[in-house]
Image 1 (spheres, rainbow, N blue to C red):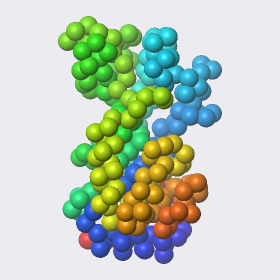
Image 2: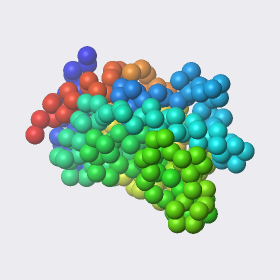
Image 3: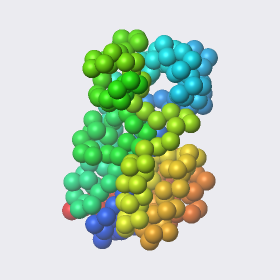
Image 4: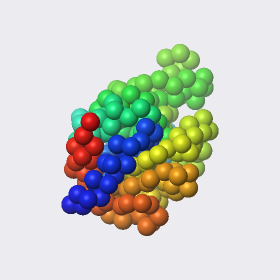
Length: 245
C-alpha cells in the first residue's frame, strides 16, 4: 500500500477548497455491479455495445428493455461500498466539491451524495419519446413495454447510449469545474472512453493536482501527478483518514 502517496494527496486536499472527483465502473464493481462490457457484458449472446444504442431500440425495443430490466434487477439489491461513503465525507468538508460519475447505477446517490453529475444518466430514470418528460422509475420488474402516464408514449431508459451526444449543459458544467479545480481525483475508470478520458488532462493543464486511483495503470497514468493501484473501497477511506479534519 502506497501510504506516502495517499498522504501526499491528503495534504493537497487539506490545502484546497475546490476539488473534483470523477468515478467510473471500478468503484461500482466493488459493490457487485457487473461492468456490462467485455465478457461481463454478454447477455443471451448479445454484447452491451449491440444493445445500448438508439438503433437497437428502434429495431427491437422489447429486447432492449428486457436487457435493462435484467440489469435493474441485478443492481437494485446492491449497496454502496466504503469508497462511495468516503466521498461523502469529502463532500461534507470541502467548500467546493464536485462529483462526476460515468456510472448509471445510482449508488452515489444511494450513499448520500447530494448532487452528483451523472454524465451518462441513470438506469433509474426513464424518458418519454413522445412528450420528452423524464422521471424516476424503480419498478423491478418493469412493465414491458413501459408507457408514459402523461401521454401514453413509449418510454426509454434515461441513459446516454453509444452514438448519442452527451448533454451540452452537463458537459459545460463539468468543464467549468475542471478549469477551476485545485485537486482532481480520478477513481476506478479505465481512461479509454472519451470525453471522460481527457478530463484529468484538462484539469492538470488548468493547474490542478491530479491523482488517479485504479486497480491497474491506465493510458493516462503517466500524465498525472500520482497514480495509485488498489481498490477504491480501501484507498479512499484511508485518504479521508489522512485528511483528518
